Amino acid sequence: MNEQDRRFTRERMTILGDVKAASFLPWIERHAAKLGIAPAIFVAGADRIELDVAGPAELVDMMEMGCSLGPIDVWVEAIRRTPIENESG
Image 1 (cartoon, rainbow, N blue to C red):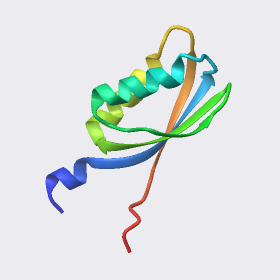
Image 2: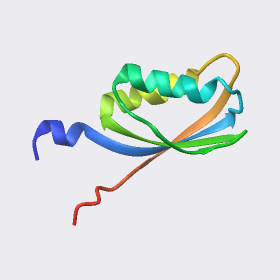
Image 3: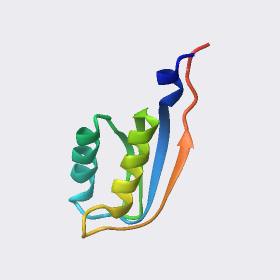
Image 4: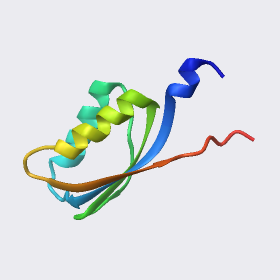
């Protein structure tokens, strides 16, 4: 495994708080696009958003930081990150 492979990560991010603002999902997508990662959003509720992100570990960290600050009309209480195992057999 080369250094680039070790630094690439796939994670499920669970964003908890008052995240029901209509602006947050488009904001997440724009922020991810700026970082060059593509989120796959699975759950979008008033108190929880779950998305999968994949990319260099540093950019996934930046995605978490950006989401924790978010737009002014949301309140993020916590972000949980869970690694997604590679599906190679």
